[in-house]
Image (cartoon, rainbow, N blue to C red; front, top):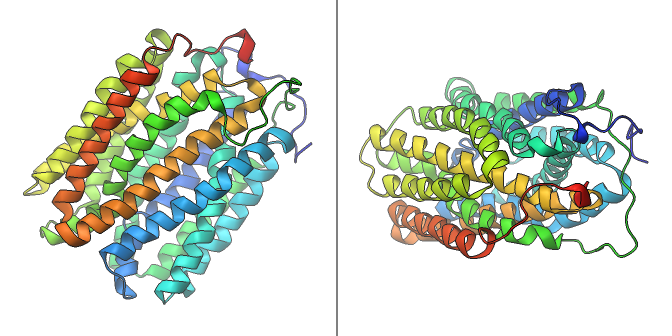
Length: 399
């Protein structure tokens, strides 16, 4: 049995949302994403400073996400066989060391190697954290629970990007990397008191595949969501510089505030009425946010895009993950989370690379236009594959 995965009363059958375990894993997620989101708008600038170009910026995000893809399915299997907490703690400890090591990457090749290792560690922490959250939230309130869990990440998005840009503008990248490592350490310390239920028994005829079959449909929709979303992660700050727009950190603040407002409401709506009334408008808003960037002329256009992006991403990502967990057998939750987040990484990674090449040769507007088309493909996939499904809530057979 993994570190401190002792048998305790399983919170998944209880009506109480804010148990000690759920509160701790949410706070850990907050610290983890604070450190991570500080790097989102600043690492592209760092890449340019050490001699990279737009294609290298896209490759930076692509390498990170594709290294996560390589490890997530194996991590999911270990979560289901060895437990959650040990993997989560080790991954967070490695992130502390890796974030500090960015300080010594003064060449593109070294930077890309560190980014590769960061992707491996991030996949462990992210997959174990979301699986742990699913374990300790009420089954019948999973849409709401996932909304709250990812709300803490949204709070980090509201604070961290602007903070990261302020640090490198007022101080230097060294302080940025030290702060990021300190936040990852705080995330690790918060995890230590968490106590988890014993792992459920596996049935003899249960799938042992690295990817969970019941998770493929919602994960396919997520691929298009994150492909579109990758454009704002990798290129927004550089696009703003090209248009001579300052204070772009406010985009991330507005985006995150909208996420905070949308996610709990979207989760409760999913628990009552299913994913369709949430995901369908969410994908439309996501496409609209990319189109606003295509035609952007000043900060007002960017902020309108931030609102639409917050509604779109906030209404789709946690709901699709709740659907993924609900449809998976209890003893395959680790594999289900890994499958979902693998598609997340594939979307971010391939989107960053493809949109980076498009930005290099045809400009940022063309890359955001392709991102909008990806969001609409996600809508088509949802309507064709997921909306006809009859099973979207957790039931006795999946507990």
